[in-house]
Image 1 (cartoon, rainbow, N blue to C red):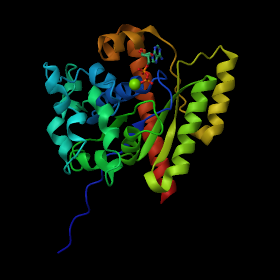
Image 2 (cartoon, rainbow, N blue to C red; image 1 turned 90 degrees about the vertical axis):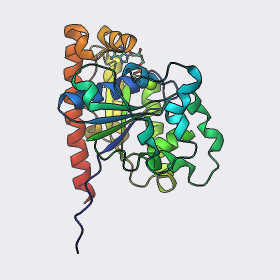
Image 3 (spheres, rainbow, N blue to C red; image 1 turned 90 degrees about the horizontal axis):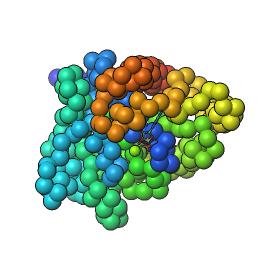
Image 4 (cartoon, protein in one colour; image 1 turned 135 degrees about the vertical axis):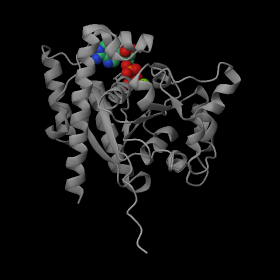
Length: 283
Ligand SMILES: Nc1ncnc2c1ncn2[C@@H]1O[C@H](COP(=O)(O)OP(=O)(O)O)[C@@H](O)[C@H]1O
Ligand SMILES: [Mg+2]
């Protein structure tokens, strides 16, 4: 008897840069909303112990402080059975189609402690193991990463991912940080994840009228090639902060917020095209 081929897994995309404040969480949350707007189901994995995507998506953790870690990735990742993440899947607390289509694997401060058990065999494969089967109903898995590079949390996030999206300001230190991301993937490819690919760089807080931003954008394009730079560039706009501060979808943050939401939809379309292009060039 022949078996049907296994259903394709959704793309697993880590959102990472070796720098804080460059827009990793804004990009994770914005892309999750864009995917939901286009009818897709999304699982957001919050691998940053700061828990910012958990909060911004209003994924509800228990009120009692002592119960929170157990309901988060901090509770299941120390010794996960295959598919252990099923027990902590939490719906997005935004209204309407977002609640139906976005789920979160929430974070908690205690996730910081996972590194203490980094010496266990295959410790960097724990997130991958916890996700097994849990990801099947989704069209997209987005993993929000901490700003660290040589960290056990980053190792787990990248081991579980197919692609990396790198939000990056067009400024010297952010571009250098993005370069270090690519260097680390190349250096540790064989031990960490031979299949991990850069999907692209997303220019954030971009000011087209600043010549230094144009210069640094050119530097960004030299890291992996101009075809890896997302043509949508995110301007510095107050609605991005309003959405983050109040844990709201951009679509509820006025006309500026709706404009930003449209930019995220363009970015999601571009990301999917990049993935198709990379899949085709790999076969
Ligand atoms: N394009 C933007 N315009 C205005 N504020 C932004 C923009 N992108 C990010 N921010 C703000 O900058 C701060 C850091 O962004 P965040 O996405 O949390 O970065 P990271 O996850 O990389 O640390 C947040 O307060 C966010 O609202
Ligand atoms: Mg963040």
